[in-house]
Image 1 (tube, rainbow, N blue to C red):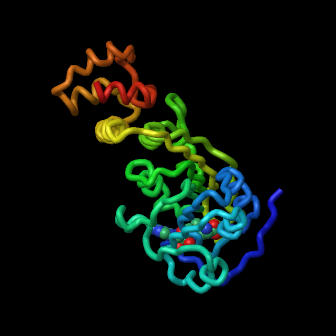
Image 2: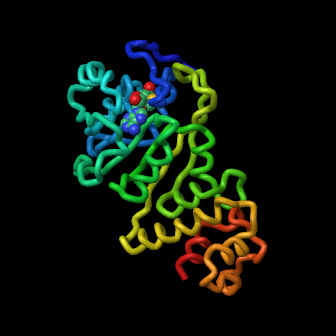
Image 3: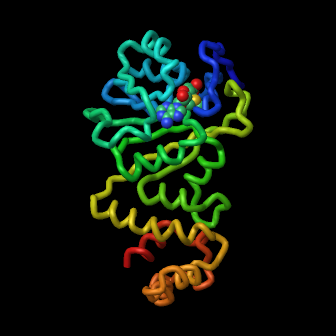
Length: 265
Ligand code: SAM
């Protein structure tokens, strides 16, 4: 059963900033439960808006760092969360060396604007800092893609990228009526737990992803013929044979682990 939060029209929603404010109590409850944060942790929330999730995050006793692009939220956030640190501006524009220091286990969350969910996830996975866990609310399609395995309908480049750096799974799905204004589509919770990797392992994965993005741009074609055409200096047929990949396999049939081997031999 959906419990409606009191909807507060303190600030009118800006579509250009992906503002669909949460009005469903179940969302902050699930985000906090899945984060499993306590006073020993530091939470970064991307896009707190008027603080619908932040109120629940504050109750965990964790240190709060908020990142919000919309300065109109300043009076609300500073009054409601006097102890939180707030960085104003576009999270994706903050230089890596200007990000706040991480001095406690890092947990990251947010009801992310639809237009920048994927770049935010990529930033944490590819550049860091490495959180213990991330819990995001995203458009359903993106959450399903991020958590999909090979041979599943949603499996694609984003699934491989996430699997190279983390374990990921989806939580509950919420209808448009959980937000104000109502978006056109459902939203789904995505949990991502980055794995420990050496610098060398990260570089190998980033390098492999460049080629993987090429083959996934035509995911229904045969991977072997795509590779032969695009990267002709490698004996791809021999690599396929060595790794036991069917010569007729399409990119969508090859697991992240096998793709990693294929591009790092
Ligand atoms: N957390 C609030 C809630 O659940 O009601 C607001 C969620 S709303 C979907 C997305 C929030 O992200 C908005 O407050 C918006 O201003 C903010 N935002 C959009 N783009 C951003 C960016 N690039 N960096 C930081 N915040 C951003």
